[in-house]
Image 1 (tube, helix red, strand yellow):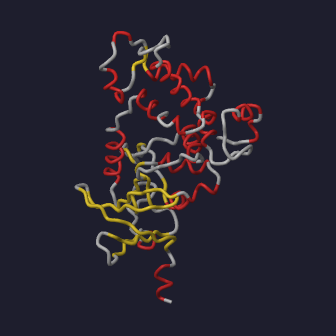
Image 2: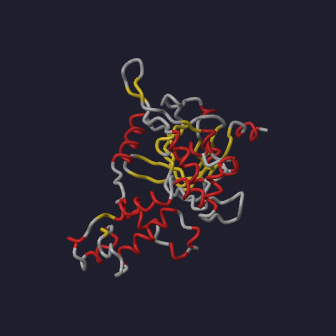
Image 3: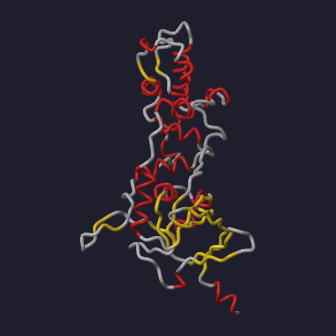
Length: 294
């Protein structure tokens, strides 16, 4: 009876690995999107009545959430990076003191391995990853059981939450767009040509234009750093445009909405066939009511 009383407040129990770094200890674990949506919230950066800033997040961008939701529903979905969580913090950024509403850490016999008991109800703040998580709200119920990697900080004060968010997002360097496109289309030879997205088809054509000796654009397309060894053997004075510019130009001739087409072709299930091809895109255009991308 006492054991039942002990655990009646806890919704779930998860295993976690303790990680020690200069800022402090945190715990790496996995939680389903469903559970995270139920036990966490985000705190938008804003000024309170005293003129002090509270919260650390940007307002949710609904169009961005819908785009991420399409990616979640695709067969290529993967979120390998952690969702950062501040446990035992309420929506106003205050530390939760009531024991029945706090996350609890239990030791195990394995070094650095712990059991975390999570109470029912909202009891944590998302420090980083709110768009990834909230995009699941725009998917069907089945996708909410996808597991997400989480880095969990306990009793982390609001200034440190803001510091982590600003450091992570402020120090990120954008990937060179030409390099990203070339990497995006690297596996075109491994998939049937009729399943290539407009982006992959455009990357394929760009490569052909640049490397075929009978092409009017032979060695006139500037490649990303990935091909720096090739660049040493060509006359850079002949370059006319970048890979990104060429790919985007071709895509405009192929599709009016390349991202939507890419997400559709990558979807796990099709109402027309088991494997989507570019010929299905016409059906998508003709009858948008048959499939809900947004």
